[in-house]
Length: 329
Ligand SMILES: NC(=O)c1ccc[n+]([C@@H]2O[C@H](COP(=O)([O-])OP(=O)(O)OC[C@H]3O[C@@H](n4cnc5c(N)ncnc54)[C@H](OP(=O)(O)O)[C@@H]3O)[C@@H](O)[C@H]2O)c1
Image (cartoon, rainbow, N blue to C red):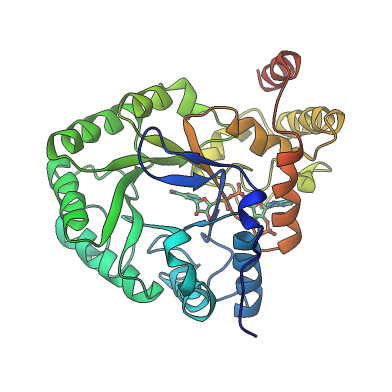
């Protein structure tokens, strides 16, 4: 059946400008990291992606290595783009990244010129695109001169393959260093995509949000639900084989029990706000205008639709914020 997007899609979710740039993004972006690769039936992936778009999520986040299986998430997105979303290209903010392991050999990772140039070409082919809206250097490269990485991203903009550039997983100091080079080159630097959620507030505490703001860039918060910890999924206990992301490993430093107690206390607060824990977690991130967009992941349509309901109660009282700080202390 020919897909026709919901005509009311822009009334469902707030969107915001990234700093004072010309780029506007939805409050929530949809990421294809580990749930929509080749292990998921295409019909399910298509349903989730189109449900996101129909509900105001017009930004989709990919990376060369997403899948599982390198390139398979971009291939999935490419199939849905070709069959359904192509007529909406002007409305879509499509982002991808390169830098984690992408193909065999020493040139298949990090941020040298040859690696970034080839990775982007492969991403464009897989997704069936002429350009991406944001291209990120996916991680800090300890060996390549920062100027080379910045100049390559700048070149890709000048070639018309990329509209804005970003970095991902860069610390506050690393972000400041590359932002200065971008400013000298005149490169449209749009932001840093980092792990940020109620349990993991490093982006705020390290000064990263301030640095981005000073450079007219925004923060794109990934992993807002901490691999599902900030949902009602683990309130009765976190399994021993819980697949924690490296950025959230520290959450277990006082043991599983301590973390479970925090999750239950946060859930009680969410319920007092007539919200689920995941809805409160998304609302909490979006209180800060320097957070340009929160990048969520879901393979189940029900999860996606439930999370979108955070818009019913986006604000917090001072008492609620103080209670969250108390629980997390
Ligand atoms: N730049 C980077 O290095 C980097 C790293 C990690 C992620 N990212 C980006 O951020 C995106 C999101 O990351 P993430 O997947 O960690 O995000 P997340 O939204 O924090 O967590 C997604 C997980 O939470 C579950 N979930 C979502 N809503 C739920 C609900 N209402 N109830 C119960 N479970 C729920 C999902 O389960 P189901 O699948 O069962 O729906 C999924 O397992 C990625 O796709 C990627 O685009 C970037």
